[in-house]
Image (tube, rainbow, N blue to C red; front, side):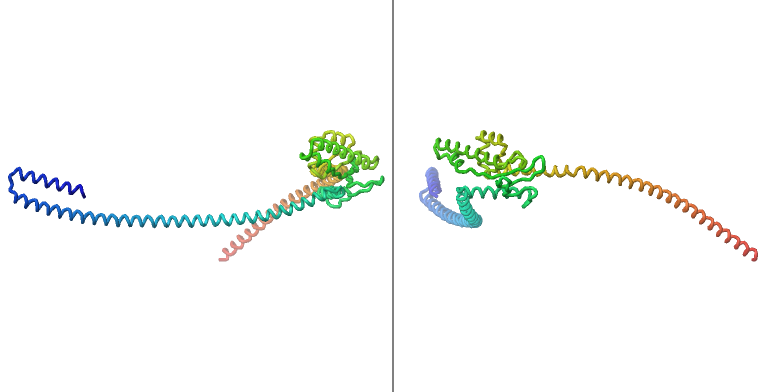
Length: 359
């Protein structure tokens, strides 16, 4: 607005200069300047009014646009808040479910921890360890051969030398009777593998562990390998996979000693594999036992089948003969039928001729 006023004043000055140059009288100039001032004031007033009206309209339009934008932003924010609230609610529910599962798992872990403590307290006693090994062995035997299958195995079997084996397997020849006894050398093994012990303590425990294993092997070989009663082999069952793995990995001298005494060291996994193999051998032996009977029965069946074939051939030839005779009879029947048709046709013609003569 200041620029416009300045411009108008410049125009007035120019007009004054022009009037002076043309010798216009002062009254005329004053009159014109008054009119010009009036026009300028009027134009400035109109400009103010137009400018104020345009500014108000622009401000109102801008206010409406801002209000519209604010409504859109508010709606969008509410929508995002609802979505985020729903996601948060789902996440919270999922967290509660997971916490519930974690709580259940923690309870199971507490129960398992109690069972482990109970198992450790059981395994610290030699008698309890022996019972644990016997129960484990009985479960494996029943899993492979069936429960109480006394034709194949017996638990706590007493020999004539007053010794009792944890289990005896009655396999057919050439396997024979095989004794299985459970042993569980734990104390010296634990001291041997415990890294918190000193090297000297672990070395002494290793020596004691080897002596324990060799003593178990000797006891089984002396008690359960009986001439003319059992086979010349026996099985030592270790109910702990860790001890079996330790022996096979780091104590080859124990393995060699067991081979020498013909006592085979097994774990739960290897014993199941061994018993499964023996089961297959037993089935093959039983099948071979009846192979001759099956062969003789096949011979009888072959004779009967040949007899059946001869009789079938005779019946087939008889059926062919009867079939040929049936065809011949059918042919003769057709011929006779044709004769009757011919005779019937002749009679009809003769009767018609006589009637024509009478007429």
